[in-house]
Image (cartoon, rainbow, N blue to C red; front, top):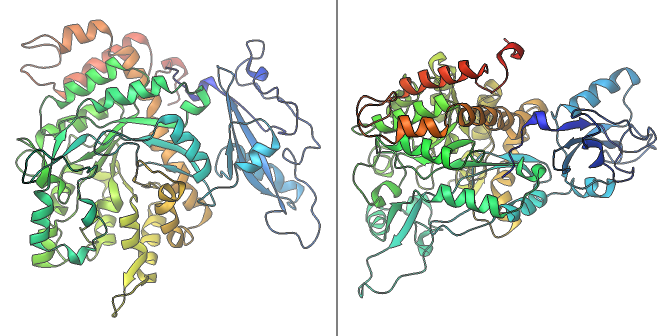
Length: 546
């Protein structure tokens, strides 16, 4: 499998009407990073003159930015630049486009038509997806190459790959031989149920309808299907596979992570989505010692710390409240809020990039608590939690942010909630990431549902903040982790390291007992980097920026 880093690609503001020789521009005869000047008369390479009365789209041009990869493949992004910009301001607009601060089109083609087609998306704009599941609870789903084809239509620039790490095993049927065709933890007849319809009795029935069993094979499956996909370097650069198949309650989960990285180097970027507390799911978990925020949290803390040593971000699903607590006590005192704050603020988490999923723990049936935005504000402004981010994924969550029920039970827009969310995001623009939480989508509209639901919120944000939420923070949090993980794999997870530190029973340099100690792993990492003369990103120390 090809591993792509930014140092392996060149960039140029290119004329997409020119002959299709982009692949040759990255040949061995031309040094990587060299940009070719194209035809100055090109409508995509320059600011074209427009007549009066033309639409705003016609009064702009797509400024092309092409990255060339070692295998000859390329990715071109287009950013709309106003046509009537004073000469003195043109350089600034083009520079902003080249830096990727705005993405209005994406294509792997090499002509103007391909770029213009790349501007037509289901979402109407482009975003990156920090929360996407290609598989269902039966480990069946969409292939990487199918993902990319749909991403081009929906308007998704980059996406994580988060396989569902549990198998659903339907149960409770009288003959004990019939296996119902369920592929989700909620039976089909209950999936459209509204929150107020989930009574305690109905929740008990759903919880008993299936068991969920941890499947640690899913990460090997991800690596296998990535290998089988035959993606070009440019296509591979748009995907970030994540490790999910870990038993969070097991103190051996950190060791399992290292084994997965060693077995499939160059594959994974982060960990997650992994789950601590989730409505229904935690009751369906089949097995002892499920991780939680009270009496079995330490193994997960150690896994978080290990992820920080490796350089992997962790995407965490943890409901802020429980359905039982909300039925009994209302929405004013979220049951898990204090526990999640203790976890995120713990010494084990401080050096790890954490992403709290679903706008901070809102769920299908767990309602947005009172003062939720203020509770999140307290976390995000806490200097001990500067490593904490929030993804706003899941259409069920988006609906709670932008909609409300009026006195007649009819759903309508909720301007107050939208304003509160927009204010919080604007206050912390570098801490929020767009995500869909789409699950093995069969059509474009399904993948686009969350983004379309959030349009009233996104429209409240400034262009700069909107870009950070939809594109920029993914680049920093997710893409920015790639080089760190690759450096750890290359310089730390050698065969000798695994044989001497991980496999043997008894004490090793990584542990005194049977479980890896993150601080000893950190010391081993630092020693390996020092011996190789590189920093945490694998860059020579002499050339590192300090």
